[in-house]
Image (cartoon, rainbow, N blue to C red; front, side, top):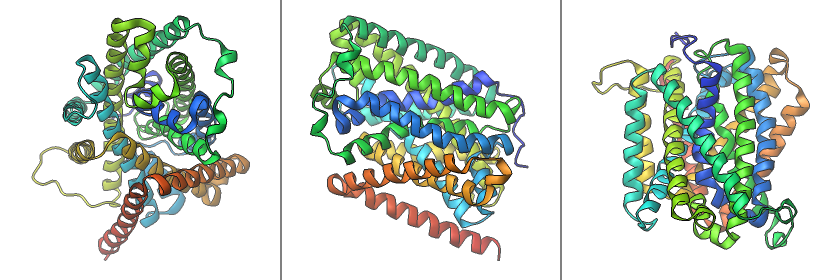
Length: 432
């Protein structure tokens, strides 16, 4: 029942395309400006540090995927670690909501970048409208099946990775890039340690897309090896791309200019380097990247929530809709993402996503350490390091938000409490 999706329908390259699709779609376009706002001129190194922290976390997922490849991915991992109960179901839903939040983040980014072609203000109602159109389009592509998803993701991944690399190298060349200037610590003392750690929370969010690969474990060719390989390759590709782009943007814009245009900083950075043609090129790449990011994320989260439904860990109502549970989940995912896209701005969406993901990741790592370490042959020191890094970064991020936007913390805490209590009530009634 849990592996009923078509086996061997995703190649290693296709899995990498899905992972990079989610990461690059949200990471560099949506989050670069926000990371720069918290870390100043050192923001390129925040992405490097975020890659290292994500690498420690990825170790646990690779070990789990080698032992338990499944179309349920993280949902199955949590059940293996904690049993079929409230903790596992709540953790899986946190991941699902984190992914849906990511979709609304990418959708609004799509709107912000697209409007740069028309000199329309970023506060325009067209930002959420375009975001909603993108989500609906991603839904339509997802109901068409794995082959179309895999092919479209692969093509768009090649286009956007190549395009972003061209932008980055060209912008560095046009600005007369000097690595010595890039690594200088000018203005670095203007930021508190907690700010830098908060920047890491957002940079980690830029890499969390690697987890979507685990949700297609039952469909990837030779999953016991290729899920882990896809995770490693995706992280390496994204790290290189993020660093190239971060240095390119920092070479063409001041920190104040990056912050002022934080929702579309790559497009702004292309202007001094390439003029209007550079703007068109960069916006075009952003559109491709955000489209593929949404497609990949919707694909993954619908599988995971369908898995939870199959395992009777979350309630399900078909509301008279035809088709299987996974197709119903596509509808629910799209509707929630649309609501978030309409009512939340980029900063708050990113903050909620970071909090949910870090809490869920701590739960995964703790589950491995306590209950699965020997079974999956994981190194305790690496797992403990991953947990400590997550706790430090999450604590600093919450400290920042407590002083700047406590509403985000309140919404996150209330949502997590409701998820836990709702799951506890559902499972208690389900088993009676």
